[in-house]
Structures are given as structure tokens and as C-alpha cells.
Length: 116
Image 1 (cartoon, rainbow, N blue to C red):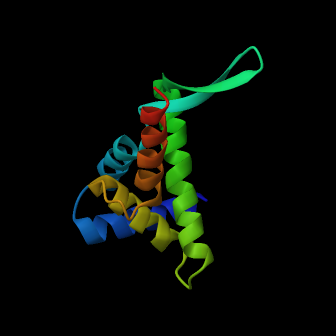
Image 2 (tube, helix red, strand yellow):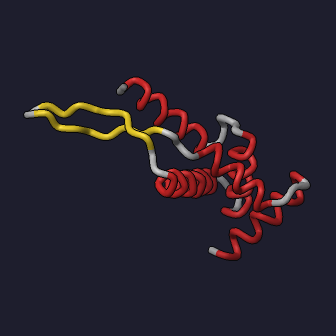
């Protein structure tokens, strides 16, 4: 796993000519949801409610979504996992909707907006 991350960081620095750690930080910022939905039970009724996500949860969800996006991208193609991880980091750092993590964040926040 460490080798994959190193290779992905090398590809990010080659393509973007920027510090790969800064790209990862930007990707996490753009992929971290600010609000989420939880279910509250009143009597026998479940009601969705929007709640603010804690900073630790935002970080965990963002990293999980970035890694899931890379895994899904490499599963159905001949690209290696490190290439897909580099692509996901670059797209998420730009805030592009083509990134799985950014698209997932937008979806979660849209659902939370409707649950207010």
C-alpha cells in the first residue's frame, strides 16, 4: 500500500508540477462533506435530519471516498491502482465532478440540504 501511494505521489508531481502532499490536502478539503444525514426516531417514525460532520469524520470520509474512487476506477480498466489514485487526487484537488470523492460529497450534501 505504501508503494502505491509513493508511485501515485510521483505521478501527481510529474503531471501537475506541484507538491503532491499539497495536492492531497486540497483533494481532502474538496472531498470532505460539511453536512450529513442521520435518522432520528420519533415514536414509530424515522425522520432524516441534517447534522454537521465533525472534523475527524470529514477527514475519514474524504480519504475513504478518494480511495474507493481509485479502487473502482482500476477495477474495470487496465490502469494500475497507483495511476487511478493519482487521477483521483488530481481531480479531487481541482474540485472536478469527475472525481468519485467530490461527486459523493455533493450527493451527501444535497441529501442533507433536503433533510433540513
